[in-house]
Picture (cartoon, rainbow, N blue to C red):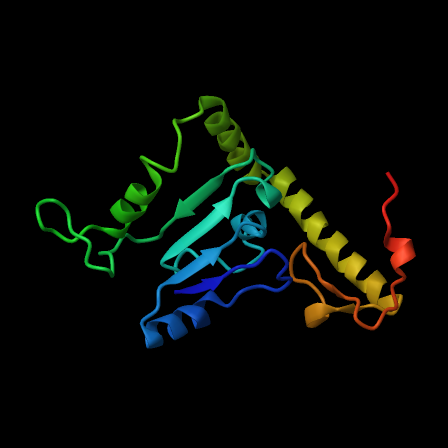
Amino acid sequence: MIICGASAYSRDWDYVRLRKIADEVGAFLLADISHPAGLIAKGLLNDPLPHCHVISTTTHKTLRGPRGGLIMMGKDFENPWGQKTPKGELKMMSAVLDGAVFPGTQGGPLEHVIASKAIAFEEALSDDYFKYILQVIRNAKTMAKEFVDRGYKIISGGTDNHLMLIDLRSKILQASRLKTHW
């Protein structure tokens, strides 16, 4: 399995290239888009859905919904592990995923959370959300530039999204200044 997606990856993913690599080596490609999901939903970053076997995400973070998660697929396909139905037919991947989540690891549906997710998805379709998420990206780029102007190094040289990592290895940090006083 090749997993693309990270909590602090500041660049866009090349899902087309990753899928090509996965196909060449016979790997399953999973994208975790928990952090950039809102940017992807508005077309500001590459869409993994046509290229990845499975996509996982959260409904909070850039989607601004309630805490929760989603597992998504584009086209359904036969599972690559040969799992079969009681009738001996190959299970589709959607059935394998459904069986792995429910019953067992997922509790009963919470209607108020489902409604909250629906509202967050509706908001993500709006022009106001598009303006908001563009401003989030502008803010991150400005912040990255300000750090660079102050002598800090940004890992990857900048950001394509709302995330950045600052390389502090060249900085002398005094432990006494890092203490938290309660």
